[in-house]
Image 1 (spheres, rainbow over the protein chains, first blue to last red):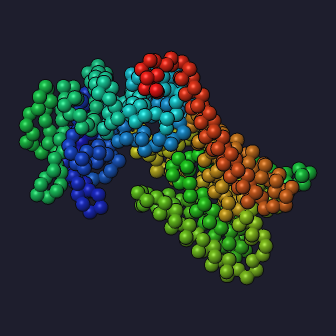
Image 2 (image 1 turned 120 degrees about the vertical axis):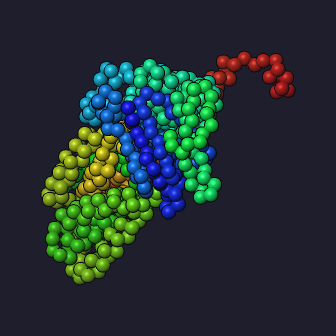
Image 3 (image 1 turned 45 degrees about the vertical axis):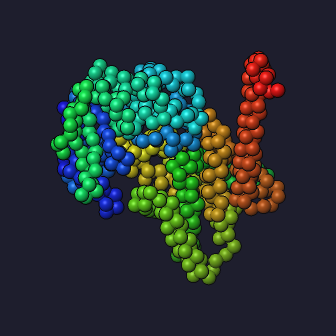
Length: 239
Length: 290
């Protein structure tokens, strides 16, 4: 099932285009990485797919339903979001609990299953011991892990993660990739992740979206590569 | 002091506004809109001046203009997404210039107008008290029912939007409630100091509270104590209530932050001492020390 798509999308900032001819489809139950050099519009691509930005040209769509016909729940972790909000006066438990707010009514009280989901997310990200600490007191890697815990607590159908492993050590990154792989394989979730650690995550991926610079115009377009063990040279503009 | 009818009204109104304004302050600070209260109070002043000029109840016009200003700033904030403070500056300039013009045109301007600038306990009449009660009900319902969406929006609007929240509508509602609270707070602390009631308790609460929920309640507590202490001091010393309340809140902030820093230093020292006592001196360390 197609969860999100970009068709012939063109987008830019000011009057300078940064993304052109973007044709991307994200299907359910796949682990997709987005990669490319700095300034290659990776974050822009995610925001367009999520409907946070409107394309200049072309269409960007995100499904309103999941595979089971229920409401599509999206767990979005923006780039370095925790570092930007280090002064936020929240403790870790409150912050991760806020992930559950996207499930069901905004008005209902937290139930037993909500608390269990939160605790499980904290355990999976190895942040349970930090639950009473304030966000601002944590290190960069710990902040990133609690952001992931919040997304995990939501138990979304689609994870959209923008450089989620920033600040994490190699061991934490390996655990995280395995965790996301399990979410896809065992729970049927979908993961789209911007990463610069391609060699590390490569064995886990189903598909790779590469953003490249078009030398003659300075615009970028995307290519796709299948990732079952090793890469196939990218030639097509369609992902 | 509480034998006087006007002081009873002042304490009642002050209590209501302190609780609301301090809770609002936490959200405003976290949304990086600390100057919004200041801006809306200046806009509201234009409403008061307009009401006085056109012989309409200034409280009502001030209230309405503050809400219109809040809605306008929300739209401008979206237009100037990267530099949201620009929208604040634009509306503030507009509000202030309009008030100065209207005040200049009003030849019958009397001393009661200064009570809107600096606050006055006697300025709180029955109409204003009713406005405050209405604001209190709307504000309390808004903050209680939308506490979870507001938490998410305050942290990050984009994530909140991907969670399916109607961020634009909630932000608009937040701006309207902000306008209402600012307009309701004006008779007590005055236009020039209304932001103190909103920003100062929240600034301290954010620094000292262990959690978000605690920050909201601590801010409300600080605001309430500050307003009651300020009103009492104002009565005893015959000073303007707005300035006195703002000064008391400023003292609270300075003392609170200093105490927190001192306690932190003491805690670090105690921790270092414990670690030193627990770690036995090794021969190599002794050699290095020599």
